[in-house]
Length: 77
Image (cartoon, rainbow, N blue to C red):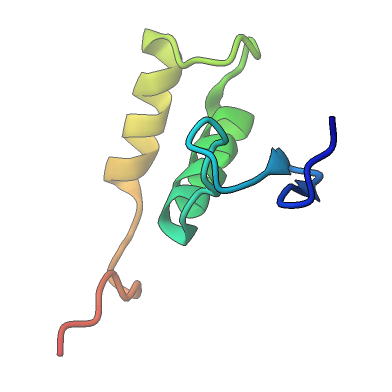
């Protein structure tokens, strides 16, 4: 039965004020998901949805060999 307090969201389904509906992810969570997806796209060679030891080692080797000298990692006021 449709209830007037529900609103449809194509990403999360029907939403209301009830606790059993998931909350929207925060911007930080969306950013982490973006980086996780990028990592799997670029390092999950066998496309099984996880990094095995060899795939993780390639990721680690790329991380430690990257030249960060021109990157702004954080802004400290």
